[in-house]
Image (tube, rainbow, N blue to C red):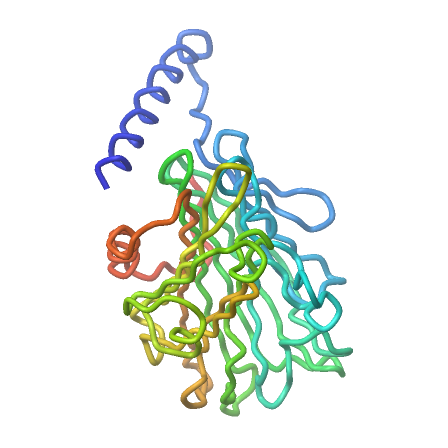
Length: 324
């Protein structure tokens, strides 16, 4: 944590000096935010730290579901990929980092089947800042006939910690669209999935899987409850890196079982043990974190990042007054 504090102090000092120089030339100039989320053509948004892209959100109307790709780490390489490296056809739904569920009121939104779609209706807000940047999206989960099965508000925030590590926070508010309860059925698939880069997978790259309970490897982690699971491995020539997927204590059933495979993917099984019913007027709140890092961290190092993540208050899921 001392390295994070030192890095933040250096960034603040550089920012302060640069701001002072600009102020001498443009007395009414506003500071340029350290972290920005920039809307792009073709329904995309890029999260950037001083012009360097960390991740990109894809939410076009033709997509089966929104997703984030790339998720850049050490050496500027994406630590995730699109699709299974050995079975890209039946696993075409493995879109880097994605939100989905196999049984929402009986409708399967997990695989790329004809019909059901998680549709982005609009991006309500983009906000930049020195510590983080975030966006707020409104989605509808629609069946094959275009009927809205579930309403979703999604907030994605990026917080850089150092040149080689950063945190992504994904918050969701899921609601029933009518006056009837909505059931998220029992399944191991959903609510979040992460498809790691081929070189990081255990089978293809010789990577490592570790969970918060001290277990390592698919056989000892598969569908077992945990606070977090880390997937690390070779990310670039001579460099290692990975992602820790974290389950927030406020989520139902925490610690939640994780579905983890040696072929390079991990996900949190929200309704593996039992279904969850969303009552009308009482939306379900969920929060997940992804710590993107260099190296192969120890359990103690990962816990040092999970602890502050676990203690932060859930943000508002409503549009906020913009910065002046």
